[in-house]
Image (tube, rainbow over all chains, first blue to last red; front, top):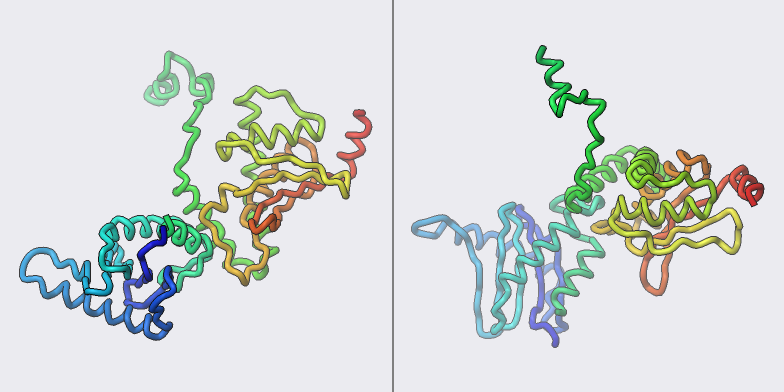
Length: 134
Length: 193
């Protein structure tokens, strides 16, 4: 069954895009647009966190529109996992947590990866594709 | 006095008479992989080429191998191996199981050179989370395991040259540990019949 997820972005705590992965052939943004989208979303997320009238600020979690759905998962270390998918997908939060678990395994335990740098780990790509395909 | 009390605490035995503790046989994979990752990064800052990095990793594994051989032979009460095939089978099964929880995939003798043997391992445990970047060529962090095998063979009096190689096998990258025994080992093997 083809997955209904379109794109995964990973943004580091400074707002820079460190990972992009497209899962479907439609509507692929080019590289510059992806970078701009990531840094803009990072700023909006920070502003939204300050707008809450009471309680702990959390930032933007979901953006729902007629044609797409965007889910953001922020880790305690400030990394954001952003998933773009079709409107009716419901389990994105648990999916993003599983991707976080894959990140902490195949990226952070890789001796050739520097923190906050673009992610170029072959095993991570393989595992993310396998997870989305299932 | 207090010092004498501490050393005879268990049923009046001195500390050197107590049985050697069995110890925990399992360690968290994540903890080990973080430590291994740090070791690789540490050596990366001190070398200039991938060959040197592999040599450093092998050097680190050497001591581990020598100690593992002692420990496994003590715990399993194994007989001392004098023949090549016996020693390699002991390494491939018993010591691999003690280190990685399972036996190695296969042991093979090279058809090209009669002093070369190979231990095949599809996915070495130390490489579980490691993705080598394209510009590092054929670096294989299982050189650490090759160093351990080298340490074991040296301690058991089978001097050899041991290296780890990545081989492409039907789209997959597999690891092979190549063992080239020295001349004296081959002569001794011939003498033993």
